[in-house]
Image 1 (cartoon, one colour):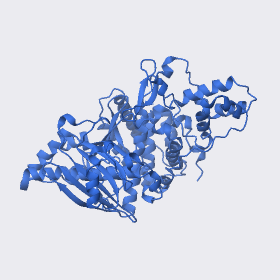
Image 2 (cartoon, rainbow, N blue to C red):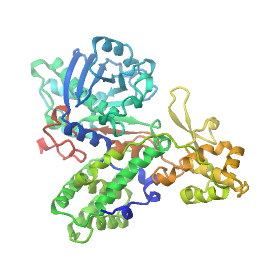
Image 3 (tube, rainbow, N blue to C red):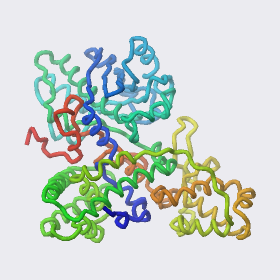
Amino acid sequence: MHNDGLMRDPNTVTQLARLGSAHAHRLSFMRVLLRRLKRENWRFSRHRFEIDANGVGRAVYLAAGPEHTYALVAFAHDLPDELRSDRVIAEAWDTTFCLHDGIPSDADLDRLEANVPKQEAGRISGRELSLSRANRSVRLFKTVIDALSTGQQPDADELLRVGYLMRTTAVYGSGKFGAADRDAISDRAEFASPFQVELLNVFLIRAFTLDLVEHMAAAKGGESAVTLEPALRRTLGVGNSTGLGMAPFLVNHPRLTHSWLHARETALARVRALPDAPQYTVDAFLHFLRRAQQNAATWHSEHPVQQPKIASLVQDLNTLSDHFERFDWQTIQPWNALWVWAEATLGLEGQEQLLALMLEPHGDLVDDLADALSTDEPFPPLDARGSVADFRAFLQTHYGWALSIDHAPDSSRARFWYVSEEKLEPRLGERFDEPGAEREQPLGISWQVRQLDDALDAHDPNASLVDFLARHPEHRHTVRRSQLAPAHPYMEVRDNLIDAGMLPIDLLRVKLAFFGANRFDPRSDRWLRITMFQHAPFPDELQSDDADDWCYPLYPPAANA
């Protein structure tokens, strides 16, 4: 199958507004994880559950794979309301967790209990793979306990609207605070795809959270208490508050960004290249389209940027549905014809949703691309051969998008990225209104390329690039980064990331869509809330249920339909 000619242009794919319209899809990391857990027949158990009637204590959940066993170690606390905060600067949480490599001993648990609840102020060891914390959705958490304790089921609409009983405020891995470095586990098959450690952690947190609320309801109601009906359980995922700390990731990991987008774009191109559309794939597409329409219709946000995006998506999906009814599926390359129509008809939200929907019936064609989502991150050595003129031509070829941006107005350079001293977290400053621009992080790629090209223009065009860099070492970083571009065309966000109108939530959304999140709910232009694993099977359901058919849930839940 030849699909190279059907790959979308990086200039189209990596525009910030389009990245900020991304949707979860078959190659999203949560779905990759659950497919593997089911395929390899992972076994899950609640190893220890030492929690009192007030929801305080510790628990251990085991996930046993073909070669390794991992343990979620959970510590539940009785947190006063005034100490509860989603801010990264919080110092106390309702629950704290780590993912331990192997089955923890009593000594391990005592060591972890002395450190994990402190989070950044404590230290874990190389036996731990991640560190995390979460807070209750207080009102809904209490509502569910009150209902279950009296033998009643909570209101299904309210569960669907909120979507979680606990939301994480950080999930750390890859060597932070003493945890195992990525290199220590990179050869394990279950962690080959990105963020599988962190997402396994969250998947187990979800199971613990539901067990915790049912345990507290039973302690309160005694024999009158009931557990959540399975269909209602599935409506609850794990919430997450994500802010600027995650925003620079795509810029700081250009080769990885390329890998993610290239894999997704290859999947789309493979589907577009199919010569025909068997009826079962058309039926499956319609099935997921109807569910995506329901999902969009029940997706609510109070943010003024998100509201028109949701309205646009609803309209786009209705337009797509109408077109489906009269579309000729007997045409040559019907999926490509559908895509070409969508590019000319639908908005960004609708196009990116259609991309995800077109992959759904074609798992056998695209799921293998999950193996291409990771990459080694080290940059190759800088190549300083050639002349200044040659390198300027190179920049024009691969960074013409950056050189076409007008950086003269102050508004084009209104912001600067920096790292806060207090929490060592990325932050965004206002260049002309706040101090600190001297600590700017190199995330404004288009501006750096503009400055590099201006410096090259002032240099002898026949001089060597070596001579230029010897005189202008401040540009070495940009030169070295740019040399990745020919082999990694999707690596750059092709927009001005320091412009006054730039929306950091667009950077957050594309990353979180690759995680597998849906129904994004911005709370400002700098942070948003999502729900992870909502509607997914629980660990004890994986072997009997479809591990992959939950991204577009049925409303109402199937058991109550």
